[in-house]
Image: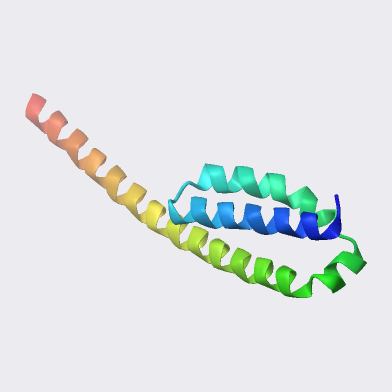
Length: 99
């Protein structure tokens, strides 16, 4: 694949990953990242030098997606913990109600 086409494909996949992350579709974001990863790895030193601005953009966007993923993980863990507490309370109520 030609350098400019490769960079465009990586940028397009990055756009799709951002979109999936914005929708909190983390399985899709991960799937797209798996597709994108070998393309990034196939960039040679000359490609990176010639496309430095695009690479810097991809790196910055990846950092933002990663931060969003971390925030989402913390929020989901908190929701899970709260839900498990509610389940435990409901179980305790059911046990007490059966007495």
